[in-house]
Figure 1 (spheres, rainbow, N blue to C red):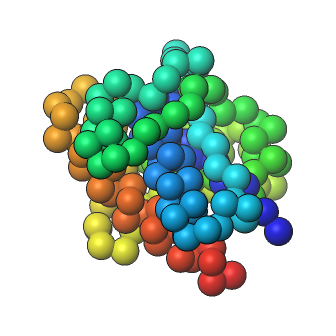
Figure 2: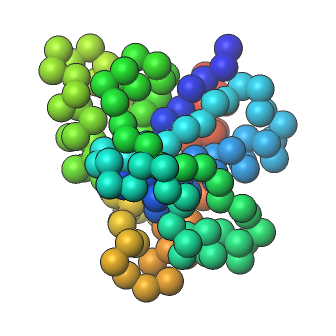
Length: 156
């Protein structure tokens, strides 16, 4: 059965599209492309339709990855549509759950960093207002978390 994963951050131009693209990369590398559908969204709608941030794309390019996609806003129906929703930080987590007042889908919403195997971060930091090293750090952190997530889902 195909698992539908949704990665969520604030604007859907830095962290969540990076997680989506990294997860797709890891899934393809392991030949599991038919088992996962990955998407991303932002809790805010400022960047709807925009490509991933150019600095995030540049950091990805240095690792031989092309980050694709266009930003969209998270909607309440995403709670029903997806099997697992991964929040980049606690604010994203709270904003996602705010769209589930009956608490029907809380078990589907997880923190991305809960799947880290090496890093001890509890949240994926937003690199938007920082320098290029922040984007590199987020990519490294997300490779760790996505690897742990894939391992966790493959064992089920």
